[in-house]
Amino acid sequence: MTRLVLIHGRDQGGLEPDGIEDRWIDALNAGLAASGSTLRLTDDDATFVYYGDTLAALDDGSDTGAVDPAPPVTVHAFDAGSPTTHRLLADEARFALAVVHEILIAAEISPDAQADDVHAPPAGPAPTDPAPTDPAPATAARPSAALDGSALDGSALDGSALAVALARALAALDRYVPGLSGAVVLLALRDVYTYLHDDEARAAVDAGVLAALATDEPAVVVAHSLGSVIAYQVLRSQEAGGLDVPLLVTLGSPLAIRAVREAVTAIAPPGWPAPVDRWVAVRDPRDLLSLHDLTPRTFPLEPPGPGVENTRVDNPVPGHHAAAAQADGVTAGYAATPEVGSLLDAALAP
Image (cartoon, rainbow, N blue to C red; front, side, top):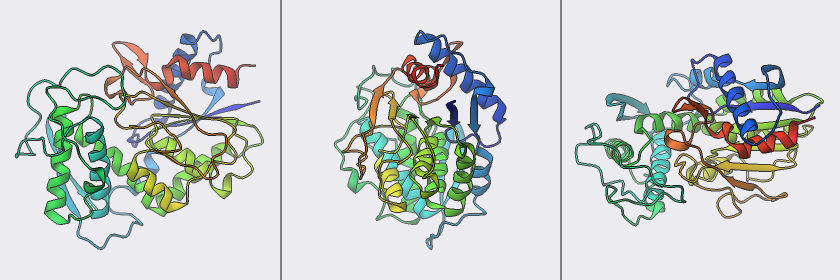
């Protein structure tokens, strides 16, 4: 019998795991129905890996294995119009700045487009969301600039200059990119940074995923956002050598974002995860927290294995990134797309 293992995305700390799992199951069943499948899943059919509290406890600023001799950086942002203050390691702030700059470049927004007062909340309505394309095009409401991403990673910045640059970039997200909040993006990136740069955090999270996978049965793995990074790290590890994963489905994976790819490569050179027979990367081209398909150019693997299959979908939720959510009263998200439903029907149906 083939089991289903689900790995959630970031910022799930403090939430009820059963509630998150129920939303995922509802969304997956919506996708199965949309694909024409008669298969329906229950809680008993899936193992839901919940790592949110583990990661949150290790990312509270008081317990980190990351080494950063530079003084911490205080960054101001806004969440739903309310000011928020974040204290980051300098390297953590540089990582966040590199990712946010890459998002802004993909949306054809200059990181300097924001008004001088970076602490002011976004003004006016957000521009109309663009039709699916890759990358998202500029509009008249979006000041654009041709930017060299290699010059915008913040490597030459320290202290207040780094804090201002990051705050400015986050404010540009708030003002010009619909569906994304600078504060929410920053929280997501802190989770990603902690997992990739803190050995203790990564070991604790990986242990939970391995425990869910370590049985004699084959497992289909569906992993969203940061969960896709975690799934990849676990499945390429030596500890995963005896596992059997006929299908890995990643939803909105950030693995091809440059700063994320570089951090993954720093742990170990990327290669095909040995237990995996087939890897399908599902992405909405409008998802700016995913940005790129997983191709030999954006995420080179050595050995390459059979190669990652990229499937583009329509994820109608705000921001186009959620795995399971409600959009206009309808269950939606990556997990609810017919493309994901078809993959699971083929892999799990008796």
